[in-house]
Structures are given as structure tokens and as C-alpha cells.
View 1 (cartoon, rainbow over the protein chains, first blue to last red):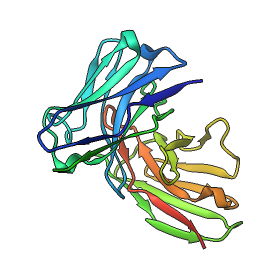
View 2: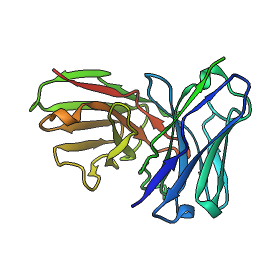
View 3: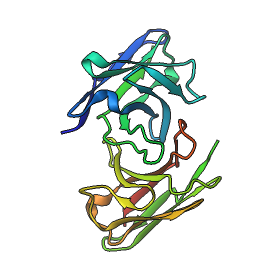
View 4: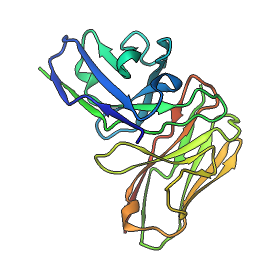
Length: 121
Length: 108
């Protein structure tokens, strides 16, 4: 079974750093992109960026460029999303999702179960 | 940037009703349009890819159509388990992906 399993919920204070993870299984991890998607409380889905685990090449949405870092360790089939200094506005559910490398057929499937990040003083 | 406008933002319908959601792109995106279902407290799930292709295992009461700038998502006979928020998503200008704002579907 193809699946993405994310790390557990986090509660942090403003200014703290954080890294959350997404582990793929049941497929060739380096043959697909991994994207990260934010969902703020009661809001819609926002694409943040993606990584090609084969070479760690990344693309970011302009809205998130410079605010987060996406990385991957292909040896353990895991992608990461990290913040160096969290803000209260980073409070959200974060999903990872797999997409293909073709530009002609490109969708998110499957998705991880989500990681809830709460930033509060 | 390509903007995706979904309507309505919320919808109340009865079991057995035909439900239609529309998604309009700000420019021609060919058929590079996917639909997802997100049930409360759950991760999104792919239902329709490339505008009209039903993902394996998804009930046939779900369908999608359209190309260019105008797209439609339809549930032919609403079931109680279809209560969810539905999102369209374009991928015409990779690497950027854009989601519609979502349609929250409730049972009347």
C-alpha cells in the first residue's frame, strides 16, 4: 500500500524552531515529488512547495519562499518541512502529498494524515 | 498567477439530489484540473483527475467535466457519506499549484 505517514502534533512557542516529517512507503520514494500543503483553521488548502527527493531540488510558492525550508533524506524515504522561527500565524494543519514527475498528469495522491502545528505563548 | 474561483462556497442538499459545483480558471488551463474531497478532520482525497477521469475506487456517482476555463463537478445522487468540502486544483503552470477556495456540502 502506498502511504505517507507524518509526524505527530506539535505545540511550540513563538520564535522556536520546528521540523516535521513525512515518511513514504510502498513505492519508489525518489520517483515522485513530495509537496507540502497548509490548511489554516477553518480555511482552504494552500500549496507551499515541493521537493524532488532524488536530488533535493525544490520549488516554493512565492507566499512561502524564505519562511520555510523543505528538505528530504532519500535514504530513509522521508521529507521534511521546517521553520527557524515560528510565529503564531504558522498555527495550522500541514499535509504532505505525493505527485508525479510528468507535467501532463499531475495530481496529489496519496496525502499524509496531517500534522497539527500550534504556536502559542 | 492563475486564480481558481469555485462556486458556491457552501451548499445544502437532500439525499438523492443531484449536486453541481463549478470551478472557473482565470486563464485557459486545458484539462489540468483535479477535484478533491475533504471530510471533516481528515486529509483530502483525490476523486477526479485531468478534469474528467475518475480515480480508481471512487464511486461512479462522482463525475467531472470541462476544459479551458470552466469546469463542473457533479454528484449524481447525494449520499450521507458525501458530506465534505470539495476543492478544485489546477496544475497548468507548474511548479505552481492553485486550489479553489472550497465548497462545503451539507445535508438538508
